[in-house]
Length: 367
Figure 1 (cartoon, one colour):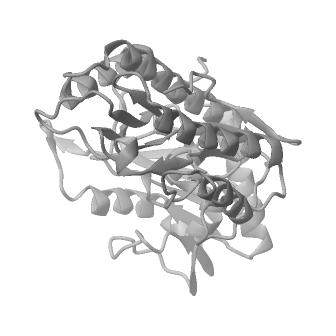
Figure 2: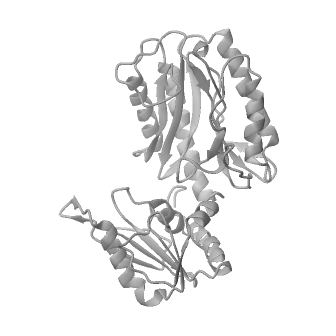
Figure 3: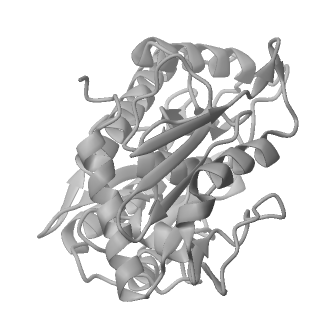
């Protein structure tokens, strides 16, 4: 098995963490329908145009309902399938049919007095009866924070894609190059690294701007900073890191602002460990950046990454999260002002270890 194929043992371990919660809270069964939760528990990742679902009983038996595939490597005790396509046409009633085949398989054995479901996506196509429904989503998001080795290998691969993208960016960014040309060349660099299609691409590809998608015909100008906030996803797992690259040589004001951002990274790497409050870290970074003679910092400091671009922990004044061992998170200090053309944001990815952090993005930080 390669580092990127389904790790059955890892999936079973995640199932056991969910089972522990179910036993503690007297939940008889859990049914999930969201792509990320199905992948996290059972292993396979299905494209967004296809519906899958999984049900796990308190005795550990997991049933996966999935579109028909020639081979399906899954951490499941039972796999039931349905036809997601008829004569190559995608069906629009997949959710209904998927839940029907799942219900036909487990309906007689579910026997749930208490059933855990995702409140945001458990709809009328789900006919499972229970005396009580509980929202299992907050628990799943909490359990997903600790990244297992199979998850971390995919995140590392996604990050390697950004490394290749930044290498190419530093080779091609110059006055006159268009944002679409940069975008296209960076996508190609990530595809070459992955050897397959991306499952995500990131947010910001604009020059002389805080961010946004590439603009048709917009060319880089001398003196501007090019903010590239890249988030290619590999087999469902996201990277998210940023570099700011000077179109021409950075001026003194830009270099001085950059030095304050470096102070934030020094503080993050010195202070983050299990038990550190993420809201407190945000405020400490805000204090450092407020001392810069030019530029404002007015967005979050970072967030967790994984099967979704933004997960816990949230480095944000609106959440009161605490770092835990196994978290994978971003730190993205920035400073923005018209004089900085239009500013800079630099973002690293880290993994929280027992006594500190591991830097996952060791590529150049310079403008």
